[in-house]
Structure formats: structure tokens, C-alpha cells
Image (tube, rainbow, N blue to C red; front, side, top):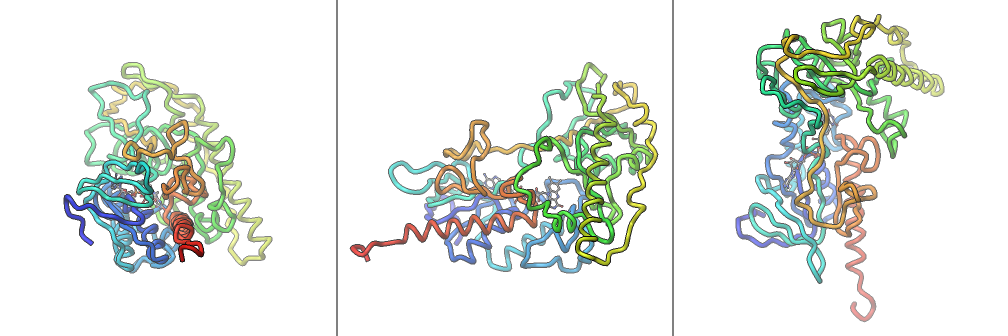
Length: 425
Ligand SMILES: Cc1cc2nc3c(=O)[nH]c(=O)nc-3n(C[C@H](O)[C@H](O)[C@H](O)COP(=O)(O)OP(=O)(O)OC[C@H]3O[C@@H](n4cnc5c(N)ncnc54)[C@H](O)[C@@H]3O)c2cc1C
């Protein structure tokens, strides 16, 4: 069905967004025979195509970071697939079951109908009536730059979402704020391109890329960590630092980054003119990251022993490099002008924007209120959010299972509504 401007369309379920979450949703709705449409304002998996830096590869190996129904053709299962091909994968996946995705159509507003069931959806191409809607608009939508960002015309400041490659930046050094997966990868790439780089490091986990011949994705799977239903208390502000950029040997190691030439600093505290101040928590943050790394090695060893697995020992994984100068003698302040730093990259995460979704499905903080994606407003669902049902929820391998649950819920609701008592049959 084509959507033409001015059409008024009625559909059982409308899915908004055709990233991986929208594609997974459509597959499960199709399998259950639920009439639906998917609207995407750009192209399928647009974020993978144009929303990230040029050299990005998937953080997990090809055997892991995929949906159950399709492998990455032409890739070694242990390889890390470049982002463009991740986007191609989702396009191919959607074609496989002829997903009813309409691209280039933006949802502008969703309202619950008064005195009758369902929702009226205002789109860039006209109105749609749907019994249910599924928001698959992404876990990472609006780049967040913290309010401490200085107003300084001499500095180029961009969010990691707008970083593409070193050539895009002006001459001079770079301060990267945030050392999750985006920040460490960008800092590494910039340093290797010849730039002077400072990296402000907060609380993080840093699993080994691989240990005893198994990728960390495998370890988190068998150890049940991807299935954790809630963040461990105290871990709410802990980011995860991983990279696929250096293949199977790419454990994020802040000491190695420092020995390579990146200057590490603690969490960014404030700006005063050209001077940036850092908290004195670099050593503590690195130590906590080391503990997380070593704890995973311990858990992996215990798992191997308990299950009598024949996986080679890897004692060298426990060797920790000597502390670099920037750790033993950490900087508390930096004069950006004096150090020739011309750019700040804010790798400080994202928020979500639901200003278009005018329904009663949010908590007092404006966050989606839901249980495994089934929201407090009957007929409104969310899929793809971090921790929607478990740790894996916002990732490729996790969202597929959440989408299945939500499609099942929709099918059950439809069954109730189809029920007719004996007088009606
Ligand atoms: C830098 C980075 C690297 C990542 N690497 C990995 C990885 O290697 N492995 C992994 O499993 N996960 C990774 N992730 C996490 C996650 O897989 C991605 O964020 C993924 O893009 C999320 O998919 P999604 O479909 O939920 O959302 P998105 O990809 O954001 O898709 C949402 C879609 O909704 C559309 N949309 C939004 N609003 C509207 C509207 N009003 N009307 C119509 N359309 C709308 C958008 O255009 C978009 O295409 C990464 C995330 C980031 C930020």
C-alpha cells in the first residue's frame, strides 16, 4: 500500500520508526498476521547509515550482533561489520518478509481518540487511524551536551553524534569528554590521525574484548548478564567502553591509550574562560573499570571450570600495564588555548524526544512508563529502549526478543476484542 498525501488510512497497528526495532516489530507482527504499517521519516536503519562516524563497526561480532533469521553474508562470523553494511543488513532483512515500511514519512503527532477506540496519527503525508501504536523511534535520539559546555567562540564543539572523521575538525588538539564506547573510539582514532588528544574519563565498565577464545558478547550471554532485568544499584551512571575497531584484540585499555599518547583526565567538572577543571577521580574510575574487567575474567574462569570446558588458559589477560604519567600525576586543570586545543567533542550520550506522542504513557520525569514495552496507556507500546526488559534491550540481539513479546501482547489483546458472547455469535 502506498501512502499518498491526503489519504486517510486505517490500520490495526502503526509502528513508528524503521531502525532495527521497527524492522523486528514488523517481522513479529507479520508472523502473527497482524495488519500493520511502519512509518520511517528517513530510510530504513538511517542511524546506522548516516548517524554515526565513518569508521564505526559493530561493537559485537557478526555471529552475535544480528537477528536470528539472517546471517551477515560475506562476513567471517567473528568479524565486526562496518556500520554501512549493518544498515544494508536491516534493509535486506525487511525485504525478506516484505515488511510494509514506508520511508520518508514522518509522524508529527499521535492523539488518543475521544469516545472511540484507537489513535489519530498526523503524519507528513496525511492522517492515519490505528488501534495501537508502537514507538520504535530509538534509544539514542537527541544528543545531550551538558550545561557546563563553555560559550567560547574560539572552540569548535560538537557532539559525538556529529563526529564523522578527523579531517572534519580544525587544526589543533581535541578534548573528548566522555569515555564510553563512542568517546574511547573517537579519542583513539583522533590520536592515531596525529592529533593531540585529551580524554575525560568517568565511571565505566570495560569488559575484555575476548578472553579464552570467546568474545565478551559470548561471556555476557552465558553468564546471564545480557538478561539482567535492571541495572545494578550504583551502576546507573556507569557507561560501557568497548570497541570492535581493532578486531578480537581490541579490549579498551585506558593505560594503553595513554601510552599511545592520549592524555587521560578525570570527569570534566567546569569551565572558566579557557580553563577546564577535572574532578580528581581518574584513578578511582580506572580502578573500578579494572575491577569490572578482572571480575569478568574471574566469572569466566569459574564458568569454564564448572562446565569443564576445554578453552585455553590466558594468564596474560591479567597483566595490567604500568600506570602512565597522566594517572600518577593527574591534571586537575587545562588551559585549552595554551595547549592548542581547538575542539571539544562531547561524547556524553543522548536523550529521547516524545513531544509528538500526546498520550498518557509517561512517568513524572517524562520517561516512558511501561512494563516490558507495554505502556500505561492501553494500545501504546515502546520497543528498543535501554533496559526495556533487560540489558540487551537496546541492542540488535535484544530488541528482536522484546519485539516478539510486544507483538504477542498485541495478538492477545486482539483476541479479547474478537470475542463474541453467545448472543452475538
Ligand atoms: C555509536 C553507537 C554505536 C552502536 N553500536 C551498536 C552495536 O555495535 N551493536 C548493537 O547491538 N547496538 C549498537 N548500538 C545501539 C543500538 O543498536 C543502536 O542505537 C540502534 O540504532 C537502535 O536501533 P532502533 O531501531 O531502536 O533505533 P534507531 O536506529 O534510532 O531508529 C529509530 C528510527 O525512528 C525514526 N523516527 C524517529 N522519530 C520518528 C517519527 N516521528 N516519525 C517517523 N520516523 C521516526 C528515525 O528516523 C530512525 O530511523 C549503537 C549505538 C550507538 C549510538
